[in-house]
Image 1 (cartoon, rainbow, N blue to C red):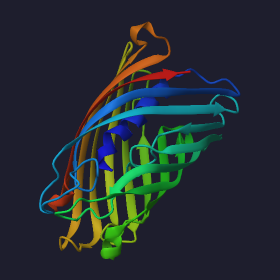
Image 2: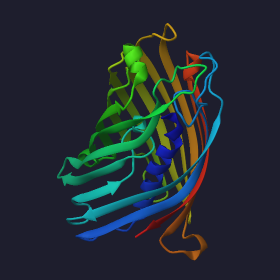
Image 3: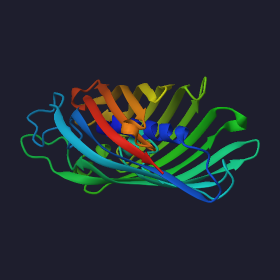
Length: 323
């Protein structure tokens, strides 16, 4: 999951940038964008098949870094079925929550409520994540299995005409062949995550915006040692100079788990740190309706149990076309 921290931010910020730059919709219009590019991620994560060797010699150390190249296509479509700033239907690939992973098919709609705000309701499916059947095996190759995640998000934005937004997310997680959950019921990984987020846009203008965001989430899994409470705070900035836009982001999270880990005889705690920078250049090479974007990011998770430490260094470049 941590592998995709930067990609999640890339998707979210890139589409926010494109939406902010888009002209006002006409009634019954369809608009959208398509991003094409690739990322390079150097990841260390014992729980992730793309971030660790299949074979472990010991459970007492962090994983060695693994290099992964991810090509991607990121589509977004919006259908305006009413007046500008009215009812809209949409499809995109923005994950609703960090725990969802880096890619999700997201379908929803938004509708304004007079003197209340903009209601946004969506459902999502993230079908492609892989996890180890038993991540704690040593001296033998670990096998992978699929982990399907789906859920819903309900948000209220522009509350009472202000820049305040709030949202609630429910995510269900189903691991196909959870071998460790059968051997150690306290480590079972089927379950759900409930999250609540509040955010506020400060100093919002065509050239600058500061957006602090605070999220609390509760993981309720079949395995109590995997159930957790997490709080997270992050800050996003958007700064535009002519055709250049800078999008830095920093974040910090803290997680505590509900029960002693049966493998390590200790209750797990995690601190997560993240930082990234996206730079976007509009109309590159005089190509109308295109934007060239580059990214560099760093993420680190520190646990009181070394096995759960993770670290990622990421870079990427992509082109976005809006129509």
